[in-house]
Amino acid sequence: MKNIENEIKTDSIIFTHGDSDGICSGAIAKSAYPEAHVYFTSPVNLLKKLDFVKKFTNIIICDIAIDERTHEQLYRRLDELAMDCNLVYIDHHPLPHMRWDAEWFYHDLSSCASELTYRVLEDSLSRDMRRIAIYGAIGDFCDDTSLITDWSQDWDKRNLYFQAGTLIQSIFYVGRNYDFKRYLIEPLSNDTIPSMIPDLLDFAKDASELEEKLRIYVKAHVKKLKNIAYIMNANGYMSKSAIYASSYGGREVGVSAEYRERKHAYDISIRSRGFADVNRVVRAVTKRLGGTGGGHSVAAGARVPADSFDEFLHEFDKAIGRAGIEDIGDE
Ligand SMILES: [Mn+2]
Image (cartoon, rainbow, N blue to C red; front, top):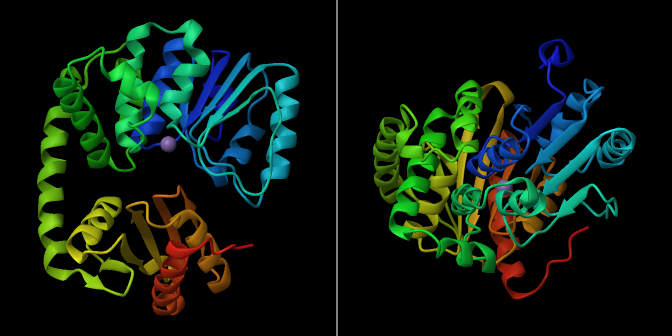
């Protein structure tokens, strides 16, 4: 990524997130701009990457949340780029106390980025690309919108779920292997079914076996507070162990935490059944305790210094209790 200008010979670029919704959004964008190069990035790195971007005709950004600390600089940079290129920024994450009324900014909290990308670029897409949007929606738990429900009826749902599951499980399996994720974008952008993409069935099978071991581990070791259930150092897919913590702990909110020695901090994944807006709650609690956190209302993440972790758990538990009753009104 450092030599982005030297590397890239085309005039279209796509930045997207490395999870299943981001990969599907990227594939849909690439179907509209087949010559585009695809890069994976994150909210904190987007601005840096945009500094390398100069002479592009099309810049498409999908599924990257707006970073709270740099949103003003980011807006200025994007608006500058939009003056001489076709810029499209598509996102569905909650916004940090700002509104961007720019014509290049497409934002909707109620659907996944893949659905939004299809809607924004629809005129350049085959109608069949809707099923890639459906895979992304299933991956992001956003498959109950009216459009996704409607589009799903054009397919045999049973095979659709099989294909979405194959894709999503293998994306878990490859973790941070961004080269593999980039490789995936091409066949998906041509609407190749995931089960026909080499390696995906094996990866999905292996991921599912690892998940099954994880589920059994969480079932045996989950701990409970009043409003949350949590699992420590499950050493596996964190978002999945948070779901199983909620299930086997019998609480509305599940938390999975793993100690990171190099950072002397805990990485945390949180899943809610909808009882409380965990994005709001975790932002408020981590702000008080010196960590960072955020995400969506039903799925969020955080990083908390190791010395504050116990306090975090108890404060978060209390705040979830309050948030379930009333809006806690942070910030
Ligand atoms: Mn997403």
